[in-house]
Length: 393
Image (cartoon, rainbow, N blue to C red; front, side, top):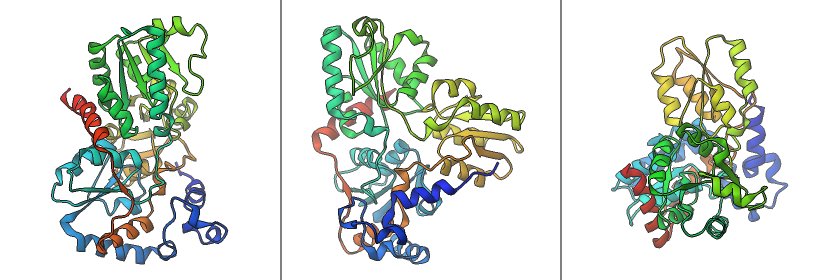
């Protein structure tokens, strides 16, 4: 099944206009957060490759580059490690001799790396505009307001344990640490939910409602014991007090825009076109998609299942397109395709371009640290508490 690529081209033009000659002249680049010197914006691929390769060699062991699975191949080829956000943060923390950690991912990932890094290490996000739309759907002010309203409604013995997905800001991880809560990944979410219910009566799960719902359903919690909390209109649902009183899990109204694109009709079409196809999806997909699939799990789980599958097997995959393309390239003995025929790359992850990597590495050679991500000491302390609770399970 061929995957259309028009979307990728349009995304680059829209997301990184400085790198497009036709749009660059029409914009006031001085006002853009993702602005880089025109010298780098106008550089061709061969020159960028030469500069990045030379800078990596010159910096040697002082530098470690991390590449998230969702990054384009033009970035992954420079990565010392590739993986999901938490795996990369952990790997970076073991490279204690590295002065610079260049995280080719998004903002919350770089924050997690800074939380786990040594004091002398500097974490750099090549493009500070690389955020995460899901992570942005929950902020500390809204979570604190939610916390207060829930306790006003349910009382101080509400027994609420806050659980934040790894895909969240450091201050939300710190909130969980300070309030008896914990962090989870898509891999360990069931184990974390199990732990949370040994600590309290209810779970407040943010920011992704779909991972929370799929995990709660797997745990055995019925739909009528789940409630969705809309931070833009809290307590607006009918019989709010009664619903909250009967709830076991409170799901934040957030989602991953990439994984929301996948649907049951896509799965049905794949089964019709390819009898015997294996359907594997990410738990950030909607519940009906997860239930219609053969397998579901984290990015690392998806990779593991496909890599160990027998030659000749066929796989329809519901996750980010760069990863699916890479899996197809690295497993040529299997038929692998993305369930969404016009899926776009993760738009925020796509903001990391080789031009930004070349720019920040050249700056390091000149003794200048650009786009450093630094988490304050108190936030780091409580975020570590929440992460260590997770790691202890």
